[in-house]
Length: 247
Image (cartoon, rainbow, N blue to C red; front, top):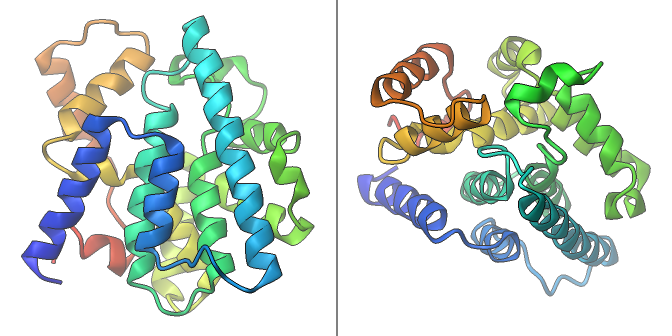
């Protein structure tokens, strides 16, 4: 991949973050980048597009309500959802063996993967993981109109973003890169952390994580410490995601 393409990718994601584009705009942009036709003759694709529009409006409404109450998390919020949707759109444009349905399900997963997040400082208030809680909440959203196998795939991919699953997910993909479900899971995990690999955005995102953890005014030293820890603890898994940063 050329440096100009990597530069374009990172500039688009940086622009999205600074402009705070809406979920609807980011989803449509990702859909176009991924090559998903809005004019498909396939009724299943059209139904999925309709449900996607409803879900975007639902997530936007819930986030706006949280914002007014002062309870929307500093990091795990609509801006994070939109960032990951757009990153996924770029990844999908480089993959030929996914159908439009599969691509839309991956974009929907990014839209919903942290829905109802209680904030990093409050996770201990749950008697189960945040990911299980998110799936529980999604059962009472427009996603309940999905065919059961579609919903179950999204639920599985969301549960696969749990910290304890990351090592196994990486091993699954590395050992069987031809397995589409393993590829899907690793793409979701890569998109989830993708913006923190952009040097110009990592300090801002690290600061937001610290604020969400309860540190209202993190120092530059604390931000730098978290960035160092992130780079030590995390890496991108899939070839396609890594190509936008490393190759």
